[in-house]
Length: 333
Image 1 (tube, helix red, strand yellow):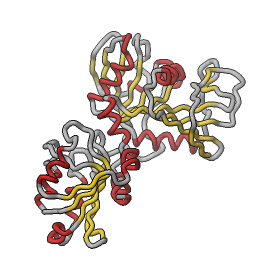
Image 2 (tube, one colour; image 1 turned 90 degrees about the vertical axis):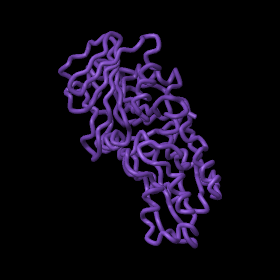
Image 3 (cartoon, rainbow, N blue to C red; image 1 turned 180 degrees about the vertical axis):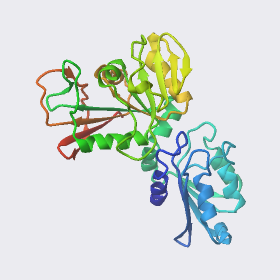
Image 4 (tube, rainbow, N blue to C red; image 1 turned 180 degrees about the horizontal axis):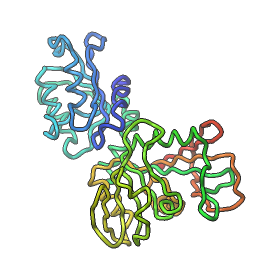
């Protein structure tokens, strides 16, 4: 199962909104086949693992390990539970039962009905952590939300004139680009878009740029900003209009439930994860509303002596050094 999790991880950034799934087939304590879900819309992990087995006659005497319950419904591909049963695989070991209502135990029921011995809960916590984005989208009907910011040693994210370049070091900024390549969407609010004019793309790492999201309630932002250059799909949530042009979409939301409307809309679009890069007011509002799952905070050695306060989180955290910066990682349990 540990090997199945390692394989599943290879699908990060390419299978969303599907979960990451790895599969291992074992005969006489020896792995004879393995595979993972490589890209959304393409064959699932079980299909790839079964196809990798050279001698198919061994399948009926083998055990199949998979980190998520095999699907039982027709989606982009046929049901994996049916495929497993068709090869008379007699034992299936599963880490997580799928909480997606389309599956929700139906895959296990199909397997058992076909005479397959099914075991669940193997490395269950590790597997759930791997697919935290998928489970959040299914169970909370919103993306997995990662708050990210860099602050000075004295607790500021920008000077009083909103200037913030550069608080964190080069290695930290490169790491942020890696994170962007791993998530579905990235969001900023009006002030950050205006003063920083960010591109919010992946430049210092390989991979796809995430969907760009900006909150501009009154439509005050200039259309000459990098966010509106059309190079990366962008959604602008506002209070006034719905419109589309050249890779940019404006979506009207209600002010009283702006964040809830925004997150629900992203969820319906199949956005399983969202990095929120600023600003401080947006971070604080999400923290106050408990609409966050993880926070990644860079603390540099720089001193501003005054400016715009960073948000505060009073929870246990993990800490590591990224060259001269400290990276604090918080989880909202």
